[in-house]
Each structure stands twice: as C-alpha cells, then as structure tokens.
Image (cartoon, rainbow, N blue to C red; front, side, top):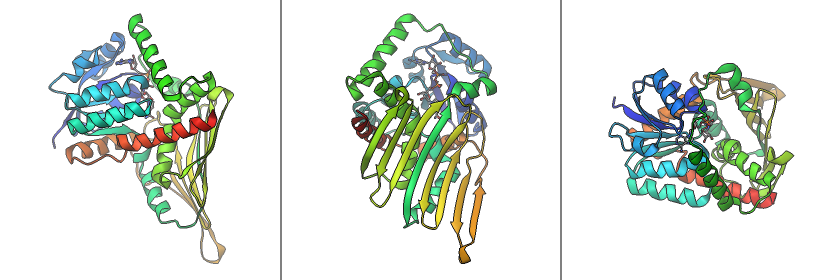
Length: 356
Ligand SMILES: NC(=O)c1ccc[n+]([C@@H]2O[C@H](COP(=O)([O-])OP(=O)(O)OC[C@H]3O[C@@H](n4cnc5c(N)ncnc54)[C@H](O)[C@@H]3O)[C@@H](O)[C@H]2O)c1
C-alpha cells in the first residue's frame, strides 16, 4: 500500500485532539512528515510529542517539501482558501477543515486552483462519513412520503468539554504583526461576504461557517438542495439561528445554538407518514463515540417498532481520512468537494439576506 505523506498547517485543538490520532491509527496509509504553526511553541511541542522532525512557522516552507504529498489545512478559517490554493499550485492534495473558505469568490478560486493542478481537494465534513449518516441517506432516498425534517445543533461551547478530556498546547508567541494581519484579513473576508453588517449578523455568519456548515451540508446530502430558504433569523447576538428550508412537499427546520451546557444535542431527523429516521451525533472531540441511527416505524397491525443501531465502531474523523486516502489514490471526486461546499455558501448568502 502506497503511503500518503502529510504536512499539517495549523496544529491547534482539532489537529492535536483528533487529526493526529486518526493519522496515527491509519499508519498503514499515512505518514505525517511536516508540521507548520504560526506559534513556534505549538509546532515545537507537537513535533516533539509526535516525533515529527520537520517543523515550520511559515506554511510556504512546508508546502515546498518534496516529502509532503498532501496538506491538512487546520489553521483559522480566514487562511483556509489561501493555504489550499498554495498547496494545489505546488501539486499537493488537500484535506481542508470546514469552512473551506469564507465567501463565494474564494470558493471559485479554490475550484480553479484544484482544476489547474488536477489534485484532490476534500472538505473535512467528518459527520458525513459516519456510517449511520450514509445509511440514513439510503433510507431517506427511498422515502416517498416525507412530511417534515429537522436539523438541530444546540451545543455547549467546545472548551467546556475539551478542558475535561484533552491536553491542548497553545502558543502566546505569535508575532504581533502576524496577529494584526490575520485580524485584518478576517475582517476583509467577512466584509466581502456580508458587507457592512451589525455585530450580531457578523457573529451569526461566523456560526454559519463554523458550526452550521456541518448541519446544512449534511441536510443537503440527506434531502438534496432545497428549493429556497423560507425564513432565517438570528437572536442573542447571533449565537442562535433558526431557519426553514423549502423542499416543496415539506419544510426542513434548522435550529442552531451555542450555550454553556457541556453536551451535544445534535441530530438530523426526517418524518415520513409511517417512519421517522434520526441520526444522532455525539461530542466530536471525545474520540470514537458512536453515531447512532434511530428508526421509529409502524408495522403490521399498528405495531410501533423502535430501533437504535450503531452500524460500526470508528471515529468519524478517521473515516474521513480513509475516504481521503481512497479519493487520492483512486482519483475519485470526494462527495465533500469544493463545489459541494459552494452550495453551503449559496444557502448562507440567502439566509443572511433574510436575516438582514
Ligand atoms: N471538523 C470539525 O468538527 C472541526 C472541529 C474544530 C475545528 N475545526 C476547524 O479547524 C480549524 C482550526 O480549529 P481549532 O479549533 O484547531 O483552532 P485553534 O485556534 O485551536 O488552532 C489553530 C492553530 O493555527 C495556528 N495558526 C494561526 N495562524 C496560522 C497560520 N497563518 N499558519 C499556520 N498556523 C496558524 C494557531 O497558532 C493555532 O495553533 C478551524 O477552521 C475550525 O473551523 C473543525
């Protein structure tokens, strides 16, 4: 089996808690050869912990390495497109954390770079690689009587769970000029996406990109692209978002929120006239928690059956890396492609217009 040599840009929370463990588990398919983080403390400590010799604070040095075949982009959101494009231009494959980018212009540029280089670019929507979700999609595809759907994602702040379950190395040594340039870049990309917006709408757009992108993208795979957005609103300074998606025969309600209760209340649920299908997600930062599939249905004589199955063990982050390996080595288009992500941005644009 040919190994893919991975360079990681951004060695913070998600890299330390999830990606490095998944890549270690898949050591027959991947080898991490280089790390980059804007913080020297982070890159040196993570490099020592995981015995990875090549360590950089400028991503261009990592991308230049001959022993890097693919790049994981796990830096802050406002750098994702730039890093992905640079990696593509150097002929590297890319697994880019969600959101792939901040606005539609950047999405076009990522797609153009991917096409120029003829490499694989996969968006790291790990929830969509959960076997329970894949099975739910098959079941829902055969349902001709959908009456209603719900996408629900109300969670406690990540920090409340991570503080109890993980050790994360953070760095306070990023040069002030780099921090200032990052803030300016982020502000410019937000402005390009949503124009001159009140603080609440800006936070709501951040929540759409950061959290709701998981839910909206899974909704699209489960139910298809909606005909349109019926309404969208934000409350509590942008921390809570509700919306309704028009699917013609039925409506899908979307409910997103972040509170201070350390738990995940995250599911997609589809109501047919005789059957209810639900995929329940658990805290993503506690590795290998199952993603169960729940089915409620009425059988002969009105019997009500309820089942909950965990189709497989295995972390969703590891499953997305397995898919990435197959996509790169077999030259297959990822289902979470840049074009797929573009559809999320189109829905966010329509939601923001209604929120305004
Ligand atoms: N798939 C998921 O469920 C999931 C979960 C968490 C985070 N994420 C995504 O992963 C990304 C990182 O999130 P995180 O929680 O690990 O954040 P984090 O702040 O903990 O880590 C980001 C790291 O990037 C470094 N960094 C900043 N600027 C950089 C640059 N220009 N080049 C290289 N490194 C740079 C920081 O020093 C930090 O160590 C975000 O885009 C986030 O949306 C995805």
